[in-house]
Length: 447
Image (cartoon, rainbow, N blue to C red; front, side, top):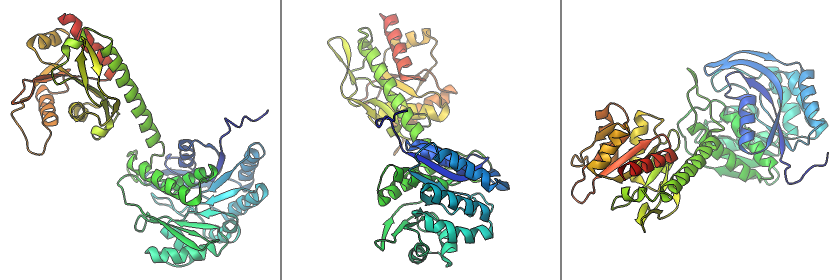
């Protein structure tokens, strides 16, 4: 079959163990590969009985079974780069080294020695074989401080120790050594033996689960190198990727939470869907001549939050509001995230109580509109603008109070205005387009 260069993507391989808890090893590697848009293949070296509390038991595959997996993939596909993870025994290390030589694989070696949640993953005799036979074959190795110290034969407790260790590891035949800073000062250190240069990539510690962070980092490096990124650029991208994967981790067990390699991709998807929903909602409002009479003097807006929104930057709305012009609703400005703190304040207050309520919009206040809302079966709650709290958004506070008073999230939250403040009705719902349809229905009933 003739290859289409326009659709061809880099193909990479992970040679590592499986994690039954889904947080590290093959599971983390393949999710990371997918996030970077490369095609991931695998050769499983060991099966671990593992969860967030640690490794309970391991079952190493026969070296021949590992070789067969690598052979099967490499005989059919062009592997640009590969990475290794858990290589438990001396026999496995030897077989992997043999296959790397045979197929001329460009290799990123992650010297996995222990699981983040606890448990040894590398036998002592395998460690010596890894140094003697596999390290000289790899182009890049990505040890953490503990692993770098073990490979170099010195303790690594600070950045200067990391520099000394990196040079010693490079002397074993590695082209580039990256000592990751997760166990030091969050700064990654790159040493390139050919140019004898050091590059530091600074970072800061973030909160979240870290199980699988080493696997994810080395897999990200592999993917970037396969996409022809330079070493330093690959290291920067890998570091940033791990940081966001930690930030988006979710507790799934009783121990160390796993990183979430797909978290950013899934969030980006939700941001796209929220933007599209608000676009559709604006079209619905703009195409309804009846709705225009519900637009207040200050204009109205409609917003939609992504699931788990943390602040107003996670809420999409119209940048310049929606105004009445020639008897119709007209959006003034683009639809973007962070466009409206007013609508976002209502949505964020609702999300804290009921995560499914992710949309809100404001319309003109009148007793007739409130009565029509009641006739549609919408729950209604009031907040008082006069009760200001210093340092707290009036809309956020007022919406929270209205929700508390109602005993849940109502369909309508309104206020009767204040000094220099127009009274307002706010509609709440699960989606922006559905809320727009409700607003149009409300306008037609009033007409």
